[in-house]
Image: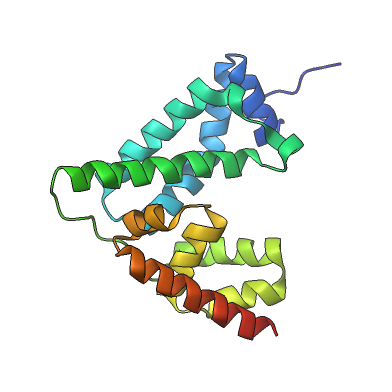
Length: 185
């Protein structure tokens, strides 16, 4: 059986080949996912230095831990796995910054033009009705829901990521769930 070239392989295969030390597969994974990942990180952090640092740490972690990717066998996707690593690295960066007593970086909560493409993809992935309900949420509620539900972050991690008190995150999560329930009923 002929092995796929990195350009022809899907992201899961690229991660598996990266685990075997295939540098070309890693470079292709980076080429495909880094633009998307940078956009998502910038939506959550306006500090370009932190975004660049998180990108570097994320791909270093991917290179080192590719063998730990469980993949489709557990219902996970390579892109989802990569985002989970990046989101956790971003939270870690915010923690380091808070530890050094600097004010938290500005968090971008408004829906930028780049965000519209992600919202469209999200709508197509989870269905029109749910996607519409998500788009209709207030930006501050959607940001909390994205971090907690889609990105799988805890209340504390979401609070650090968005620069909000934990109580505010809990309140917004509850309001978002109520609004989603009403929109879908």
